[in-house]
Length: 410
Image 1 (cartoon, helix red, strand yellow):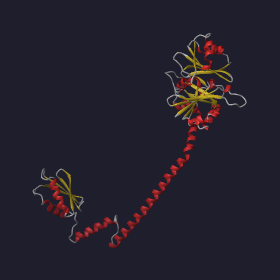
Image 2: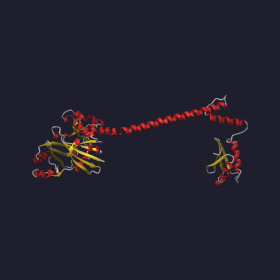
Image 3: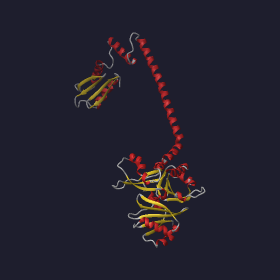
Image 4: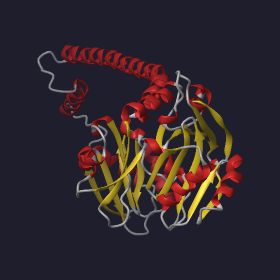
């Protein structure tokens, strides 16, 4: 996956007659390697924009103000709602016409940096990227993409249609931008005045390094370095606030991504609904069959016992009636205690030790037989099981010296 970085020039440098401004760009891999770089109009970068996982728009320093504002002790949501009122005195015009981004707190100070940009202008840029297929858009102040050593000041000078575009970074979240006449030595004196006594590192294009190195000989404390995308990207990755988030730019890209998945989601939902309807239809069919079988059993019961109402399960009720009829005729059921104990006594006769039984308990139509310690073994159990099987009964060992005997060979 790749990230596309675009440096958009200052609004003052936009060409007249509707000619699009030229933007420098770099396509970067996940490892930070620059895969492709160049320049072109923002509207002509559609293939790169749509192919990148994320687009980072670096806004000119002259178009983004970084204001230090004293913050009240409010929670995140309340503080965000109060931002327009907090920056009102430092913003020309209505704060509602601006997009605001709050930098993270640093140290114990109650002052925090707020990035301010024109909302309508930024909205046009972000919508242009979303229209070209951007999957996610971030907008950062370009002054924070300059490397910064502790105790020093960083700056950059670039040539555009309006002259020299000056970018200066004086602290981790502080910086400014100006447009100056295209003259090297006066620009260096302006930078020296803005930086104060701090050491100043100036980044310029490789083709301009010789010119500015010669001009810097007359201005003390300025180091000239070549500007490149590698250190710009490394610094931009450390920026932790995003102006585009205030526009809902990410949600716009998300809506576009949702549009691509709209039909697959609809098909999946339709498949789920079809399965739900099918399962309910099958359940209703089985329920009708179950009702028909139960009604048939009720009819059979009423035919056999016309004077007796059905009080529950007709099958269980008929079994009870049959058992009562057998008992009244002197024929007990196989799982009665007397029948089971008689069959068990005959089966235990195969054991050599006739006094091995310690106790018998009859419960829930089964017998629990407890033996004296060390009086039965697996061989004895096998012999008794074989004898019981002939009489349609079974015996299983439920514990050491404890057998569970049931009727029906279960």
